[in-house]
Image (cartoon, rainbow, N blue to C red; front, side):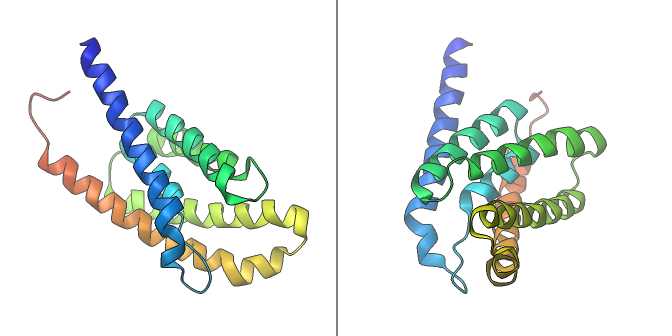
Length: 169
């Protein structure tokens, strides 16, 4: 039993490291209108819907710190936003809804919108360019993150459907 727990933590750590490397290495190559996708945010959002809550918090914390450390922006912005996403989904989504793809998609749409607005707000506190950030980058980032989230959600749903078992609790 203890070995299975360590194996699960190892798999989760490798998955978080792979998402960070995907963000760090490939995100700039997929720029659209000057905005890079945020794979780490989409991953935290997807994991918050589908996995155990402790994994979503650890993923949010670790990916937030790692993304903050390489972004060159105000340290803590990504960590706070990722943790708010994980907390919000735990408190509001899991307490009110069951697993429903449409509801998860609409909730993801709302969270992506709030994330983009929150990111523009945090950055504008120091630059003072809220409307410029909102009009030039936030809406593109919102759409980009939502599309990546939907792709990750569909992949995870198909994976869960394929590996469903009567003996699994």
